[in-house]
Amino acid sequence: MPRMRRLCRLGALAAVLAACQDSTNVGFANLIVYPILDSLFVGDNAPARNLIYINDRGDTVAPVGVRWTSSQPAVVQANNSTGALTAVGPGAAVLSAQIGSTVGQALVVVAKTLDLQLLLDTVYLMPGDTFTVPVDVKRKGGSAPPAWFKTVPSNAVFTIDSATGLITATAEGGPLPFFAHADSLVDTGAVTVVTLSDTTGGKAYYTILGTYIAHRSVAARGLNYLRRGDTATFRLRTFLSSGSTTIEAVVLTVRQPVLGASASPFIIDSLSPLEAYGRNYGYDPICQPLRNWGVWSRLLSNGVTLSGLSRYGGTVSITQVVPVANGQAISGRYFFSAQRTDEYYDPLGVLPIRGTFVAPLITDTSPCTS
Image 1 (cartoon, rainbow, N blue to C red):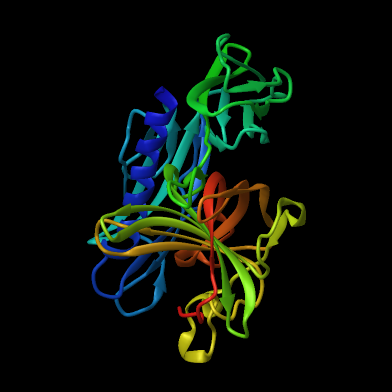
Image 2 (tube, rainbow, N blue to C red):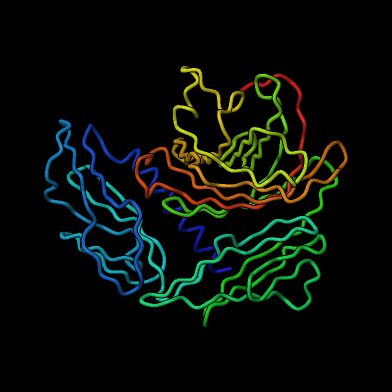
């Protein structure tokens, strides 16, 4: 799938950007490029990004002698001396500004003049589940055409409504493709319908958009546990591991147990850095969660952990709860906005995260530890 490969490259670019913000500069000097994320259409011209330069004495001074470069000149060209941008082709590029040895970076995404994107291009469901495909269609200088959908004629695993994108899972199987169209454009996704036989083998898929871009097929696990005070609490963990090391994870915590599908959707509330990490100040989001919350984290290749904490307004929905050997299995979906902790006060640091899952649901009545 060409778009899938392109999005993997975008995720790599975003990870490079995140790592460079932490490790490129030396001493106390800092060069901030903003907006940290910007989007253009092919053919657009744009002025240089804004800069804040803090020298090695800690003084904010005018940025002089800036050199500009683009990691992908076939996507975005940057005038070396003025920083003016020209959008050449679709894709993403890391834009770098340099004064001496101090470097600041931002991500620029370029779209075609008519662009179609599946916001969640892989879906995991149980038989009987329904899910409406989220899609974004943009046209430069005009209203976007409506999207329409289809799948392969021999598909016995799911159906999809051509006008709305409503998927109905009918039988275990897959992955099988579906197609979203807008005018001459087409994007491809896939659906897998999963039936668990016991409390192993959970599957999930999520997308992250914004200044960190990722599409992940991962493991999934649901847990009803006792938070401090013997109050039942639900946690969903969708994660990517290498051996015993968690590379990336999305974790959602709800201050009540999942006993059936009727109680959802659950509203995801905000989680501040102090609430997430302030154990020395008496905060414990696992054993003493103050409200429902979500978090995303990624271990980068340089050992730095990039993370995002939920803002108010997301949801996690449980669509089915079914008995399996040694417990239960659940299916559902979630959406929330995670605020990058390294860009916590920048609106452009918000990462929209969407996912679907089929997961075992375990009950743990042992005392809570975190």
